[in-house]
Image 1: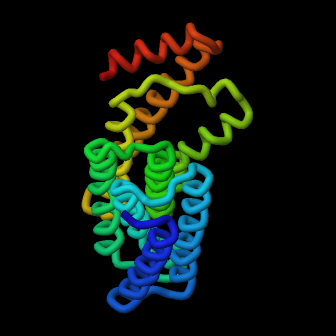
Image 2: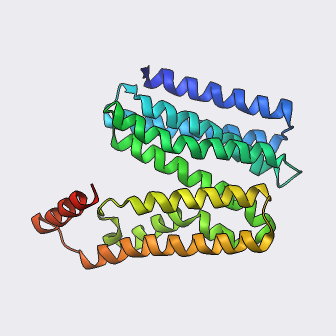
Length: 246
């Protein structure tokens, strides 16, 4: 177990080490280096603040896994930023993204196995996922069009919608389907970034992902719209839905 201070310091040092390794092996300009470093500093600052507010004294095992995944995303941020000023090694970018996606299936299991599930850890995991798909969509959009950004920015669009429509902020029953859609979203974006498939196939796959995201978020919005009430009745609905899901 790492204390919060030790974890943040370790994460930042690891982030810098990865950026140096990328610069030394495949090349990385100033813009990319600054973007990766800025990402790492932002993650450390926001995570340490969230952990302090929650009263946590140390990082759980799953938090360490997610922090490692976040470091990989920092490397991707650096490469995507560099792509605007020069060519980037696609193999390095897609390799980092693929490992980050694989680790996404690990941290949740670690948290449940070690009984260290926490609200901060779940939020950290979700935000790292959101940044990863956004970065991949930015990279892919440079070759396929800005419409791809809609696929990677759904999480942030939902955040804006919640500010405008407060009823969207309510809790929803857990659905395994949401995890499936998120996994498909990341996998398709990595394949699109790798450029190993014909353009028509990639476009069709991305359109399918957009449809899946619309269905997933639309169903949650519809459930919240129909359940715009508070109190024991709504709590009972959520409990029942959770029992069915389990």
